[in-house]
Amino acid sequence: MERTAIYPGSFDPVTNGHLDIIERGLTLFDKIIVTILENPTKKSLFTINERISLLEESLKDIGNIEIASYGGLLVDYAVKRDAQAILRGMRAVSDFEYEFQMALMNRKLNREVQTVFLMTGLRWIFTSSSIIKEAVQFGGDIESMVPAVVYEELKKKYKLS
Ligand code: PNS
Image (cartoon, rainbow, N blue to C red; front, top):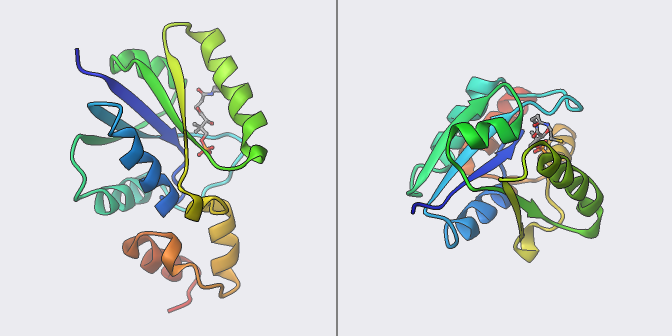
């Protein structure tokens, strides 16, 4: 049986930390569906189509990946795609409470879908899309933390080049 995981997130934008989790996830799953979903607590910088393009470009050399977006509940999308698991990255202890709450809510909504956490590589432990956006808009050097295409698009968004 093919093992499929949904890797959900806002991906606003994708970072090297996300790519690290995807690469680790591919050692466990045959296929990963990287899925952009709405996080109602966040206001996005990039449109869904822009985020899809950035993911496509950033993941073009990685196989067994599909990029998708969905406008509803994560667990419903997992069922729709016959995925056995939801894959999430864990950075520091500070991620734990939110991830724990989300995983338990998803389990309550559907007991068949398991959440699998992978620890991010140490070099990405402090990165997040939000903190990267904050740093870059004030001229911070974040080039090594995101794929090249994302770096270029961030500079354009904040009119830095
Ligand atoms: O990258 P993020 O913002 O931490 O990802 C959060 C996301 C998009 C995975 C989460 O908000 C989500 O699953 N949204 C879809 C709606 C849903 O299913 N919510 C119930 C889970 S608590």
